[in-house]
Image (cartoon, rainbow, N blue to C red; front, side):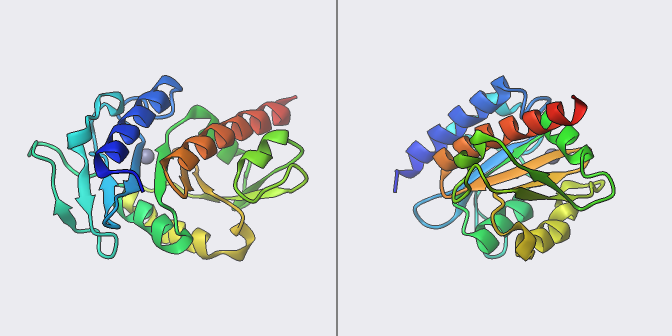
Amino acid sequence: MPSENDTRDLLCRLLQAFYGRNWVSGTGGGICALNDEGHMLLAPTGVHKELVQPDHFFTIDVRDGSVVRPPKDETLRPSECNSIFRAAIVERGAGSVMHSHALSSVLAADLAEDRDHIAIKDLEMLKGIRGVTNRDVHVLPVITNTPREFELTDQVEAALKDERYAAACAILVRDHGAYIWGADPMEVKRHAEVYHFLFEATVARARS
Ligand SMILES: [Zn+2]
């Protein structure tokens, strides 16, 4: 297990990389990872994600979402993704989760129309998702947006428990974005890169 300082540094580098891809622009989106105590390091809300520093993370108790250690900067507030990230950790054993506001994730969710899911298939990049092959039809849940981010938690928990989505490492939120998880921050990096490619490819094919 990497040191907590290394994990904090890596989360900042990933936020910068995700910002460069327009996945966490306009202060939207977020990231978390477990530290070596099993607590969740959670980025602050309402800040420019490419400017988050290693000492800006909140340390959160995964069981109840309470703040174990706040950052020194008292103006910072924990991300509204708190309860959603914890649901992915508890239900799926995730060690890290990212939240994207990418346009491709919004357009991919539109493809669900009146269904509660989309199906992705016939793409080599599917192999980049843990346990998935390029012959699989990969089904992702699509949930409905709410006025406040934490109000998505019930829908997220239902999707995480739904057997139809057992292979999914992502949830799409209509008109909003996506949550993408993995065993650790580097798997989240891979899954985020792969899923955004899959979103872009599926949207482009639907238009052609
Ligand atoms: Zn959001």
